Length: 417
Length: 222
Image (cartoon, rainbow over all chains, first blue to last red):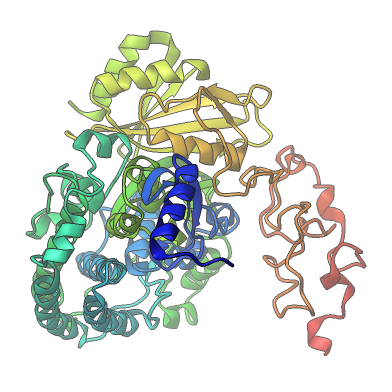
């Protein structure tokens, strides 16, 4: 190989580059790429470093959850909801239970203690999911410290989930018409302690990021989603609010005991990546406030000495007391029917949307009566949020792609179902 | 304006085309008689404030005619009013107009329905499979698609030996002659007519060349 002087080589390289001028390159990002947070594949068309076209490909984690749901009773599907947004299984459990309860017409009859515990679960899940999203987002941008901070806090939420449900990830904590069991007597105290520690950690993460010059420069004015565009693309959750749409299902379509709790909805202004980041940070603070109020107001107190129920005392909906099952005929029949046939739901169709960490997790249930859904459609927020990528990415630099993905904060288990 | 009033104002515009509004558990739904008009109805709904398309779902009414129901969930994101539009599509036709021109979010929802149910949307800019892979021959959410799956040209998972759960209701081999019989809640048109389901008659566990699990000894004997 001939090695000329450096000037000649540079001239030759420039000549060769001339031949490539205007030629586009297609780059496959994913399905196994650290910045795609799962198995998302994006086919990028590049002109140099600039993305000219982007086509997201989903479905690598498709398990057929909707098909599976048609083949089992309503209660049997609860563990499958853990695996939708696996960063916030508690919130999925709550969403699904509320949907079936709406079909049964008992969603307004839930015992107050059950409502408070469900709200605490949903808010813990929100903090947990946002913490992971934030940690991974920051790490993709080069700030590894935040990841360590957020994972320390997530570990505590896992401990709380374990104390309540017995499982750290696959919680399956809710039941149709209530909860699997009451929380342990010390649980509320642990939640309170968590809030105190979390507030400090969140402040630390904020000092590392919010006014950080590198962080702001990389996020600001990137992938701007206008208000109209966000609504047109059906974005939900922090991505919708980041674009300045004041819409939160907890406020606008209140469920559980949210009307009794005071909290603010964080809304962005420009709709860039920085706004979506700020909205998530503020949402975590608000969730913490909600948790503190719940700890204070929980009916029955921390230890529940008065024995407040956590499930609807209806033998046709929730499992009866095991002692009674073994001694009384009626409870035995109820237990048998619930386990073999499932909760007997009326024919009809409902849609229930729940404010999940990633956005609106909706269940459309089409029932023809009996204990098995005829059709159960899951409206997955991540799926809808991802569809905007082919609009957002063109014009970005390739190094911006992980930032945009991080700011949209999706999870493929939910998107692909 | 409540959801019922909004539904009635859509109904007065289109008259006989719509039936309803039906209310169940606070959800208001309207039935659109002609699926080909769904684009116009959706377009009008958007002009009266339903600017947010929450979701599009599909239902397979297997054994009935028309076979498909497509369900649209609309929302006014300012007032929070929601209505549901439903329309039936026959199996022969299996096609209805796309609403991607009204809400861009419809793009992926319609692709998903096409992928899962096989209903086509005319005027869709890019009607491809989305969750299953390109070239997959079936539509898995149809009621006549077995839970165990159907064989395709692509190779299945290769097992070196019988997996521990093989033989349970959910772990069956796609295309095995007893795989449908082992499903917990299979729906067949014969069942709907009240006759004995013929395909279920084959006893499970008999020697079956398509199913290695059925050929092997029962697990507890080992």
